[in-house]
Length: 322
Image 1 (cartoon, rainbow, N blue to C red):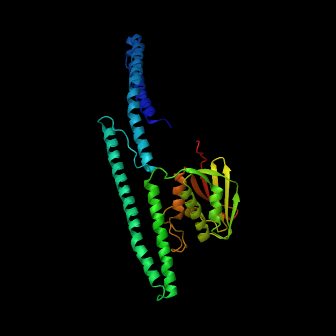
Image 2 (tube, rainbow, N blue to C red; image 1 turned 180 degrees about the vertical axis):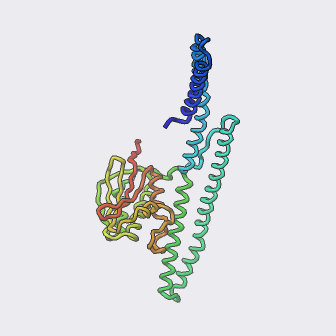
């Protein structure tokens, strides 16, 4: 499909040509035979006029559409999550007013999202103090409390602590653009340590190295393993290897396939599948996996093949020298 500036330019040029043909036809059927010797001169003059107008109209049309293209790029960047996207305001016409309105709207959105993230992080941080007091109280009532009641309280406290920790991590990943730590990480050794925490996890693969934050990559693996333990069916398998796209991490289990309409939402924060117990996990585990993968320039996706549910993480291979 032609670009906007080409369509504008061709429409202008076409209208001039049609105008020239119409004038020529009118002269031909309107008694212009007596002066037919001048008809070619008139058509030639109109053609030259069309050429001149076309030559000078092209830069004007291109300048206008370039500004519209820059505005389109800004809208696409904002829609992709770059809240700092802005476009230059050029001139004093309607396009300039539109660019100025876009910049003001983008700034307001950035402020609102930033305030929301700050509020969420601060609220999560403040929850740690009363949570610590509740934990201390349960320890003090160890002798007098009903063991079943105390076990339930301990479980609730552990789940709240995990939820707060994951909310704080998600907020930090959203607000901090650059990684805190970046080093060469032996993913096979990291996976071996995490798999050792469970008795029914099979690890397979070759030594692979990825450039990134070891704490975040450990959290990525742990969340995938926790998700397989909670929602899958053992045995759980972890496979690491080198692919054309980079380093590939596959965590799979024998659970039933997830319907496509649900699998598309697995990485949304606090999304829970139909029929899954509300107490199972925090609802942030897979969302954090996606955030961590994206922080390292990678991707994560769900696939179901040969009766196995698999989460596939692909991370780019970057060395300290690169």
